[in-house]
Length: 217
Length: 202
Image (cartoon, rainbow over all chains, first blue to last red; front, side):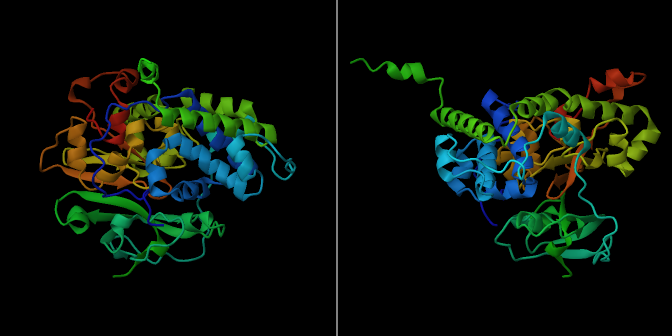
């Protein structure tokens, strides 16, 4: 979805706030982060569904709302999408109906910590499909921008790069966000010349791109 | 009536106050619904604040500076080498470590959201999540670097890494020349968070 979150290459945002070194500026931001991390187990949802909800915010709202508030709002939207809370409950903060907690169990502190320390498995080493591209191949990033969540940034669309590394088959973000996951796809690190992206410069840029984003030029 | 009441509000950003209230209401709702356990919320914040953070990454860098075999492993298979030091978890499952040299300077960004290697660096600082950093690093990395006080020679290539999929990146800075004989602990103290993102030289 070509919306405001896809910021690479945009101009007009001014200088980087280099002195804003903090992770959290307010305690409520910690609660928003923690709410997102915990609620994901009961609803449930994963990172790509959560990112997609944030991306669905109108551009003005995306820019004006606090980073962590957006996390909490997206988490609540996913809970609402699953029928676990109503719009009215989200607005008032007051519970008006019970949910089936056997079907949507909350995560315990111990289980959440264990999972957070272990990480997630996102690769598919036995994926049967052969990779379509090899090291050094020239590739073009698709021009078409999907309507839903995608990880092919706008500033790379239609640009030529070279396969720098084959990463293996990974769960596919676009499919996961659309509820069609994991739909494993080969993923590659692709290197681009600055001159190809911006018409000038001799620096280089790498991005990690799933195979459906790429084509033979 | 004197118009002095605004003075009391100078330190309060109404947008921020609204966000704080909305987040509190959402937490109370989700707890009342039984969908989240407040103890799990407390535990996860404490975990990221105490068990993850740049000192983990600094230990990795210092070891690479001290042990050529480890450095070779780290650059070849960052995930395994970092996991061997106990730094595993969400947003750090697939790690690639990229080395600064005399001819290449690496800098990491996430243009689409705020992807960042949590186990080795903790959660990202505010500037990393800012629209200015996300938008400009891919287009004018040298200008962004100069705002951080980093000026690179023209002949040095800047290599930008946009974290668009599941790989998370850690920059291996060059070991400072005046550190011969220093212990890994002393070396780790030289390593900065920005140095491992690529917005500082070490």
